[in-house]
Length: 239
Image 1 (cartoon, rainbow, N blue to C red):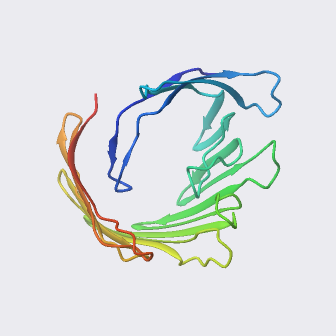
Image 2: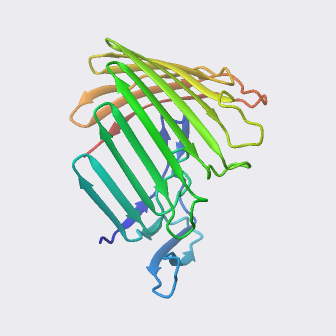
């Protein structure tokens, strides 16, 4: 059993998604467990502040058990969906590996089998294969799947991911990403593209001592004609 609080303020470059994250919240909140709630949800009392004070929150009770390569997680606030981490996929998860075979699954005790995700995987030398499926992707059709293949050749890694979006009639190749990454000492450089043919470049450099410099660039327009240009350079510190 654990209790805690979180604090978030300002904005930060999300180099992985080529965007800015963490806008200051307009409300502060304290979450309190209500024992009369059969769903185990948190009742939240929030106060709005016109000065954009950062948000405070507490975590729901959670339990993680690990043994001999297997992990079982129970979380009252929800377990992340394996296809879409922004979606809660039930309240129970299990994962593990045996040799080159790995697996993970999430399900809901309270909502039955309408909130599940699963992911088998296999690694053989420098080749890694994985598959993810779910019936709760938070898309119009909910059902979605994703296949990933990566192959490592010395300092270079080639990766390909194809996914269906959960929309009606969506195919496994409707949403795809192709990337090539290269590691040379403290530098990790990668170039990637997707179904919109928008090239992306990422180049983080480890300066040591918890300091990381980075450069990211994305340019072009997507299939709908939206401008996807984004450039950022900066330094991250970890203490």
